[in-house]
Amino acid sequence: MTPSATISIWQGANRVIDDATDRTMWQRMLHQCGDGLFLYARQLCHNDADAADVVQEAFLRVWRKHSNNGVTEPDLPALCYSAVRFTVLDRQRQAARRWRREVAAGESLYEQPPLFESSLEKAEEHAKLEMAVRELPIEQREVLTLKIWGELTFQQIATVTDESPNTVASRYRLALAALRQHLEKAGKP
Amino acid sequence: MSTPFDTLEDQLNALRPARLPATARRSILHEMQRPVTGHGWAFWQFGHRIGFQVALAGALSLTLLVGWQWLSRSLRPVSHANPAKIVASNGLLPSLALWETKLAAACPMGENTVAVLRSPSILTNIQIRR
Image (cartoon, each protein chain N blue to C red):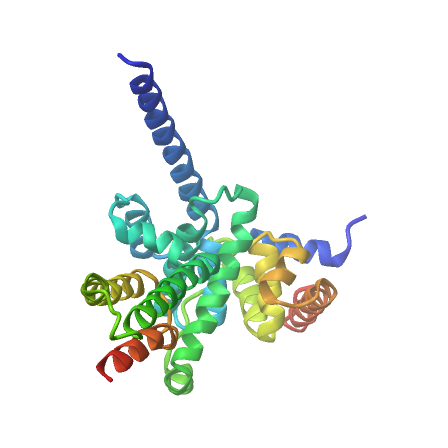
């Protein structure tokens, strides 16, 4: 076997290993962040079917753009959440009128499925919390979702939402205060 | 020291988001596992990069500009025209148009950009007809 043939076989094998590692990283990312991305998309879409489509489109968009440019795993969640936000805004711009009409008509008819999974023993507590979360203004709910379930830093959230880190941190504190107030009103400290 | 907000954060952390529908998850995995082959993929990879688009647009404009100048220079002195040059210029025109079409199809540019880049060759066609 010639040296060049050996080198090309070695390079080919290396590429296969790289591809496999890369694919595993993306699969792991989908496994870890898929539910959080879906929750975030649901906050912005008001419709589960659209939210699932948005997650699919956004994740594949990030994968196509970054699968070959050496992006590292810690950067991926912020990129994915950012892509979800961009995809939702893009869709809303494309069909603003239709979207507004659907939301106006659907809000009263569409019974929203629960945002969170719940066990029987904590069902009541979870239901109260979810109700409180749903009543937050969208800006606060967005920050809360990204911080708690997206596990992003304030700096990353600021990048995703295109706000300053101070604004984001302030919204997070306001959200927690509002939640606490709501829970106290509901009878649980 | 634990604050009331810490307790609340713990409560929120205990909530697990509802799962992404299996169909969406399967579609994503299926798309990622699809073999990546063909020229279309290569162009998709580079096509969205602005640098690539600018370079391609620059190359296209330069080709058209050089072609146009060469044509106008070779066609101006009709009386001293070299028959070989005229034949070559007549042959160059379709090939320029072909390249323009190929590059425009390969590069995901807006219609306006393509229209602007086409304009020199349109001028050339008009001049030649005159």
